[in-house]
Length: 91
Image (cartoon, rainbow, N blue to C red; front, side, top):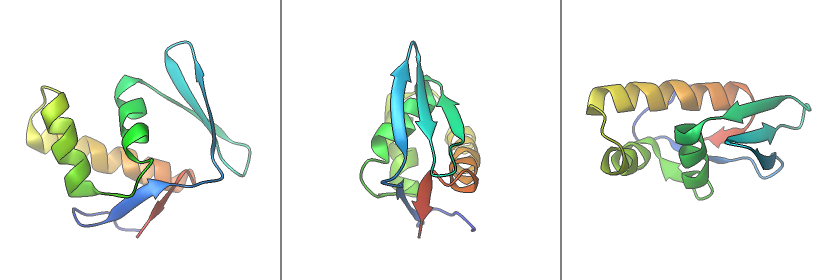
């Protein structure tokens, strides 16, 4: 699915999650797991409620010292990966 600024993204409710050391571990319905670093964990926290990509990027720009273009590009890539791994819903 194409993800753009107005796209709404949120966690899939069936995803199991746990914190292991400094990593957030996610397990999808296919029993495939993924690990998230600090920024990935923050995005995952924000996706507990439906977020547009634009709102998500705006929040991260307030919290991290990163160029807007880099933030948007990195967030879009990360969300595409989460979608491919069946960890989020995109609409």
